[in-house]
Image (cartoon, rainbow, N blue to C red):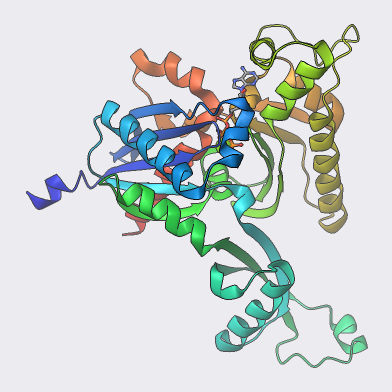
Length: 368
Ligand SMILES: Nc1ncnc2c1ncn2[C@@H]1O[C@H](COP(=O)(O)OP(=O)(O)OP(=O)(O)O)[C@@H](O)[C@H]1O
Ligand SMILES: [Mg+2]
């Protein structure tokens, strides 16, 4: 009975606190398959394109998120269960550091020392986790030249993940206050990688464009290898349309979401600097990766986030990056009832984070 009250054991809820909306999805794991059970989205309706949010005190910002989440969960009739929650990519850090192989105690010290290079604030305020992702033979010649005598002549690559404790505690408070249990809180970068790539082999390049931020992710054989956040996204596209066409923000937003492809035509004078910025950063990451990994190839890229469905955006990136570009499909590994399939397709990749979070629940459950 208690178990029943606490929610079904094989059901998992993903909660994505996006800048423009909160998205929630519930999936179940039955007969070794994922099934969509429930989903919902609530707009946060910030007026004045986010100025209101910027000026809001932290307490009232949290209150707004709290109320919005509660009303959404009520609508979805979700009053219990295990929830997985994301922290925005730009709040955290994901990096790979290379170290000589060493004992685990020494390693913990070395990682903390390295982390200081990336994290300016006190490490007491940061939650960190790391995982060794690669053991490699050290180039013997290089080791000798450097005059080092590493006991094993080997080096390791460590994936270091860090996020402010303050953010983790805030999301924990928000979700616990809504009667759900918190299964885990993770950076949304991992949620996106999970729903769009999973453990598929090969190299994948993902560009997630939300409303406030863009998250560029390179995944290789199921591991996030490179991650870069840009503090600009769909909002800046709307602003650029506003300025170029001299129209209101509301009209620019409608125009942006319309059927007209103004990204791949020479007849338009709309300049969108944020897209050029994303292209420049993507090319830099792709080239640096090619340089370092001679035998790994990136032959395509996937778009994700609410902006991904913008008319002509895939073609624009394909032309600018010189690779095939598709719109990612986070639903591909989830069974969806035929009756709601068109709705799920419509929501498409704006649910990549929420779905990836719920999938984390299934992963943890399978591991036992
Ligand atoms: N058809 C469309 N064409 C162009 N842009 C779109 C379309 N549909 C939604 N968008 C844009 O997608 C953005 C919202 O995407 P998403 O829901 O992924 O953002 P978010 O998660 O709330 O924000 P962030 O990840 O930055 O915190 C908005 O800027 C919205 O204008
Ligand atoms: Mg988002």
